[in-house]
Image (cartoon, rainbow, N blue to C red; front, side, top):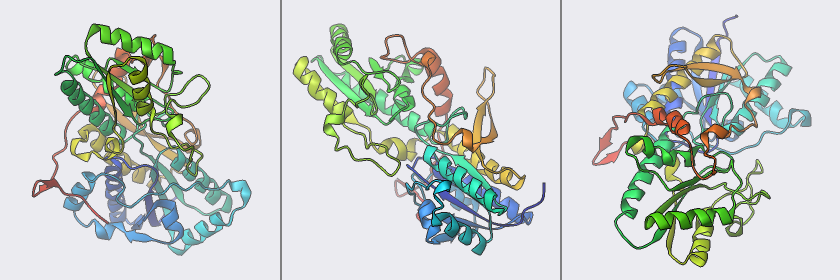
Length: 412
């Protein structure tokens, strides 16, 4: 392996999380060590991802974060401190001038290390940029650094950001269960949770089963086709057992024909990647239960709080996110490129992980679904095996720095 000396750039893309800045902190820490060894001179941060990079909107991160205290605050700051984007890169075969422009900027700033923190669509960007620079003979190490609350990236055991979102969902579900239990009036409460194609987040609502013995009556995931008649039968049977029924659903639950349960309340709009904007499944079911069963019913959409509730972040998640970012810098310095960092769970009784790499082409544009053995036979809940997988990911609380009663955040 030849030593590659030059500058580095890092960006954040896609939906924010409570841990994406902890990963950024890890990259900065790794870059600081490589600067001390003479490998990396400057670490630039792209403002608003690849879109900002194309406009040369860059910040010197090693200069901005010149102390460990600033990095500690960055690690407790939710959302993407550098800003984000949702830009779909054209195919390499299209000969789009965007790649020529990227290459010119890489050369202008002597960028030899490229780190992109994101999910599925971001890994597609990493794959394309890596292939293009190799094709052009421009020596640059291109590393995908995972993040997504959806936990839907292939090969890695789980993704940075998911554990904190799962902790928020599991905690909020327990609080809702307490609130709903105080009355004897028959009532149904539906909690709508993020998750288009994969139901990992909604599954997290059931974690309380192993902690305190309480969980929603039912959990519906997009991995199973939704049957309205079966759903109403489930609700009736639960109401016969006790007056207060709580249900967790993924926003992406759909019927056998592929149409979303909440499609009647959606406008059909899609993002640049062709993903439909989802919401309204809980509200749609609220109306149907009111009509068919006639009982009191409410729906609660957890919405953005799932990905920005840094005040209840999982320490395990934050620690692993920092480790993944730092490992990405080291992997690049050691010659790896066109890879995504992975979190690999060791086969031990006690929870342990190691950080690895995998070719990013094996990740991009694929979705890791909740496996069959994690979903019960009725398709309306999760198994103990699923909860056992989830529970270690929400462990621990970070020591948040406060000022006048509010958490301190970094604003760039």
